Amino acid sequence: MTTSGSIHQVQENAVTGGLVVPGARDATDVIHADLRGRILSGDVPAGAGLSQARIAKDHRVSRGPVREAFRLLQREGLIEVEVNQRARVTDLSVDEVEHLYAMRVSNETLALGLSVPRFTAAGLDELDRLVDAVANAEARGFDAWEDQHHRFHMRLVAHVGERMLRSMTQWAEHTRRYRKIYVSREGSGWTLGAREHAELARLCRERNTAATSMLLARHLSRAGLALIASMDPAHEPALLRAAIRQALAAAERTTP
Image (cartoon, rainbow, N blue to C red; front, top):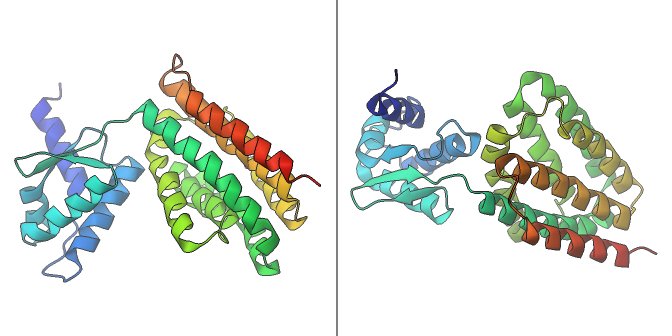
């Protein structure tokens, strides 16, 4: 039987990962990137406790860089900081999932509509390459698949501008830990999603802005709705459905 103490120990071991940053000036960036990556990948689970003292000791730095890394993670909504210099990874929330996918549907379809006319020949070739990379990564497991899948989706909206791209990247990254826990791709609608990647790339090459935007809206909404249903079948995703209707209506208005 596993005790609560041993569970906490396993969680803290997962957090530190044996990374050593002896006195590095960029210690905050390194610690922040390490913790953030582990949280988003699910290696550090929701509810796991984080100790400033423990992390500082394992990274061989003072508590200052760890405290600053915690502040960045808290601002992003990934941890909750307590008064005793400890923190915990935020719980998984169906409301957060719905919010993230509503933001993605609304903004990525808009960004794709702006990007389609701006793709260069090299950019379109890169989309085709990523379609194959996503398909080939499937056999290597979720993490390998997710990395290529994320690159593909961010390439679709690459011409929207740096500031908006940063926001969309964060929203997409935050959905990762939910998908890893709640969605098993084998035998599910995710296989259909893989076929849609190739169709999205083809429509981009044809410069068909309306059809591409509508397909992306359906592609993202299917993923979001499936994820919400797997977390809480009784949850009514009114916000996400409104975002879907708005995105589809906007795409239809661009149809020649």
